[in-house]
Image (cartoon, rainbow, N blue to C red; front, side, top):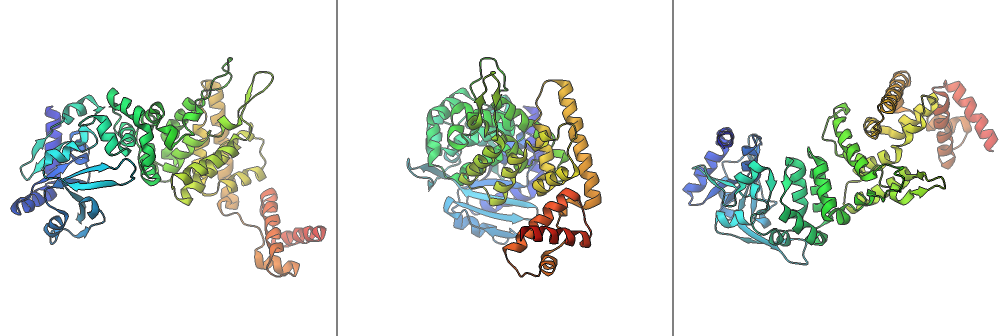
Length: 473
């Protein structure tokens, strides 16, 4: 307990330029103000943030007036929910009026009513570890629901009955999984039971809000914890049904891996490989690709007469399923294209054998991966979950060799910017034609030629083009 108190005191001292000033301003105006929720929880965990959440008895218009002249910038996009945001130096602050909100059973948006007490405000929060506050400017801790104890035991509970909490805001079921993934906490049995019984309520929540929670979960330090909770409670059946579908019924001879467990292991291994990526991690695209790379297997599973199991074309089928799911969750087109491409290409390396690919095949591998090449390296390496040490080492050596070949060819030929040896104007001049579909066909021919034979001189490329044109005519 002493360590927690010391951590909180140190963090409050660090953010004193904000909380002391604001606490004084609001107190002088006759209003209560408290640091609340995540910043209090994270202070106890020894984590520092420059994004601060506060709650107040003041109404939004009064909050805005008190911030004028103190903040460098003020915004009110959350005014309808009682929130006024501001920035002062490196600090970003959101101040929300005490509130009590509930969902209409058929509505996707909360009905917001302002409250009149800190205790009432804390009682409507999602979990006890987020239902703690520090009153300002005196810095007294308010913990009416035992959040400190739950934090010490690393458990997620709701301030009141979980059924009431999830009925008011069904997205809190997703948040339980997200916080499990972010904090590494366990979820109390009564909370898990309520999530299981009420999973269907998630369907009234907009796809965008579900997506945002899923993104935070996948990018958290322990995504396996959160994903497993979604699957075990049935929530995944509604928000990401492709994941629980990977729990394929095993054939009696156990001739194929547990695809669900394999997928979660691939995700963890991809996370371990994120330092290889230019921007490090967490990398949403790489993690989603790892999570979705085998979703085509349930639809493509076939049992052969000799008892073996096949999943032919599960890469192509899985890419289509991935794009469809991501569109339903309102991901951006760029994210959909990137993850879909990685899923579609995740098996390509296995055609490499022990290094028999030609330079042409290596060029096509790089071209098809495009700007996702580094992520494809991560996904392909992560996809090896064999317990056979020799096989694992052989696969790693082979992929090392492929990357070395890519590096050599890239240095020689600038693979990341492969273009035909003639541009559109040169093609039209050589063939004596104007713009049209024929130019596109000629361009594709020259690009394929470039892949097969490497760089050509303008003279050789023109000769090959004319021969192709004559044969085509």
